[in-house]
Image (tube, rainbow, N blue to C red):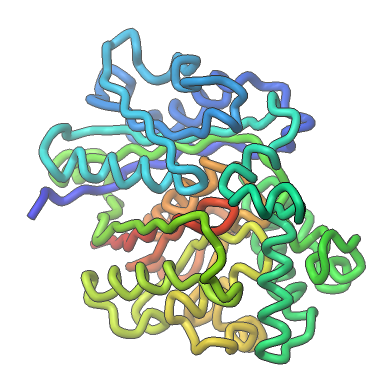
Length: 387
């Protein structure tokens, strides 16, 4: 069994539109890293290794990490760079966890940033996760894929399209309380239903923006973690799963690989009833209807019953199991950063430091999830806990 690993600090930037972004990537990077280090009185001289994640295509350059002066190159720190698409931030988190648990390093930062402001058409990059058959003749993209899932869900379980506006309204309410969120207008159900239709049944405010920003976590082995903070958050379990980009066998109704992963990690963590045993969850929801699919794949409810959890308030900030109190990716879509942010947000909740969007307690155990690939080929789940 490896060493116990804790998160001791989180650094964030405020997230903005890529169209209005004026900061260089290095400026965003430095801001997140500096905040994370300052929180616990560290400098880059104290860090033993850096784990970074990005997708070169999104940044318009090969080896984006070479442009990051905040990584401590002047101190000859080892740099681990990972790219697993949308789950890249979660993969970087898992790598940092493994490096410390294995005893290679005692103090590591894990970092992700996204600007997207140099790529003319991000959709061309996203579509590399599709089989060419879907991209070229059919014109499939992430939004039309999500809309297809939404239509199948409505048709199968006889739910009206309003269920997606209900979950979107919950997420926009939460984001309005999050000082780092990109969209903080708190759109209401009526405003969401009145927003333009993008691909039936999904409307503009039920689909994520494109955001620029960065996030950094400081992670340490147990004795160092306890010496740096009174509120360390421990990694109880961490796992990921992947799938082919082929789509012919899929039913367009479930995230079946996510269910396999959730069942696997619950068994390892000794969780039998996630709604009762988890205190908070952050999942990767770029389109409103994905939250329904996450509930069902992760065992929060039976298949087809996810809208009931929204209606009865179970997943509100003050509910039995608060899900996405940050507003999640629907309100802040920083790509690779967004997948690492799910882990950062759960850590902040367990530390009792989620300003504005803190759930009651503070919570003791939480779930963080990342989703990647335009066709949902990749998932990662971490179970985090505090003393």
